[in-house]
Length: 126
Figure 1 (cartoon, one colour):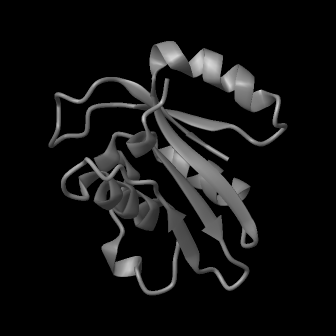
Figure 2 (cartoon, one colour):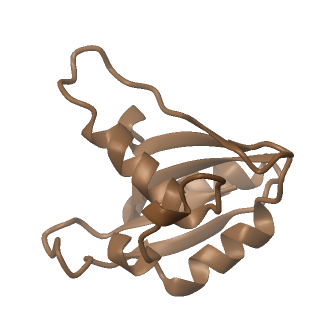
């Protein structure tokens, strides 16, 4: 249903530092998935020491409003799970996540200007 490289756990500590938890399959070469998630999270979540590495969320194909909704839903001392899922999986997964009574924030992912061949998916968080 969802591949491990398409998920990441994020913990925002009370001191504003952020822990990124990403599972890596040993058979997979390189760390492209981890680098993607690290770049995305440093761009979406204000974190001490990485503000110079921020990229506009539109560069990842996300709606501009997603960043604001995420900031409101992920204060210090909270955590979230981020997933990239195909549209056909989104409704089924959203129903399952609703049972957990968390906050679901989604954004369609549009092809960013420099990568027009990506499949359409939705990003999920908290």
